Each structure stands twice: as structure tokens, then as C-alpha cells.
Image (tube, rainbow, N blue to C red; front, side, top):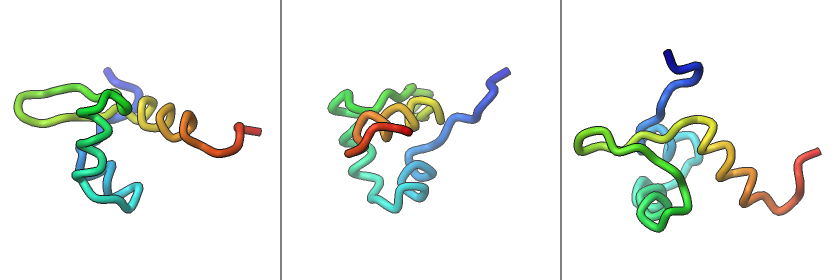
Length: 61
């Protein structure tokens, strides 16, 4: 079983307070790793965390 859930694009956009189209663009451009499940995309929590850490302006302490 998965240790952390997969998030929908809607859930990712709600968490980040961004438009769904922005999240879809990140996925389309290969910036954010996602999994295609039928007609929908899912993002693993670890992949979202990795994306955010990679785009932070300061290193993690």
C-alpha cells in the first residue's frame, strides 16, 4: 500500500493556492512529476515536496 496518498491536480492547486492550469503546465512541461490514471493526473506527495524544495530560494536547514 502507498505510505502517502496521491493528490489530484485540484488538491495540489488548493494546497498551493494556485490555479489548476499552473499545475497542469508544470506537469506538461515535465517540471512536476505526475502519474496519468485514466483521464486524470495524480501527484505523489513526495514528488510535490521535491518540486517545492528544488524551487526554494534558500537551501533547507
